[in-house]
Length: 117
Length: 112
Image (cartoon, rainbow over all chains, first blue to last red; front, top):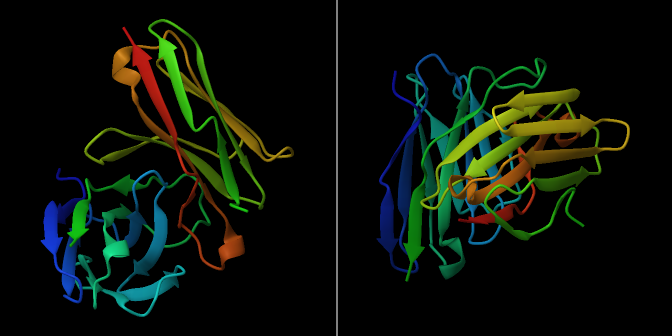
């Protein structure tokens, strides 16, 4: 059974450009979350989607947007790229969107490394 | 102030040594995760805890809910344990569930 898959694995963009990152969750998982990890820091929460609806948003500017499709895959879009957007972008999937059952697992993809030049 | 604090930030050990990483948090939580991240970026969830202690091989994770503190122990450390270890918590404080709020990570290097 495939794990969480992210594409592309690496990407180089120029300041001001737009980027789309993609994530396919584990089969049967309905929740996808996106994280940004800059060098030397832990992952920072960007978005959570569950059943195709946004369920949470972290402290990121409106240049960041996301959506979830009927097959539960997800896209993260970043407009007007800045040098500071250079980071590893991680997607994580889980069966549900809430924490009402603390026994739920959480599976990360390998990430997309975005470099903005 | 970060709501999840880890210490130390960096740790170098000789093979076979006992390693402890500490995590303190300032909010009520529904669960705490210990994550392992190898060079290249992939993250693996080692443990998810809501109380007590869990053990998997040479790894032990403990949590004290009253003191808002957790520790990750690596017994008989090995060079393959070299990685970044991240403490992450889930809390309904942030208005929605199943989102991880992470510490800055502890870089562990185990020398042969």
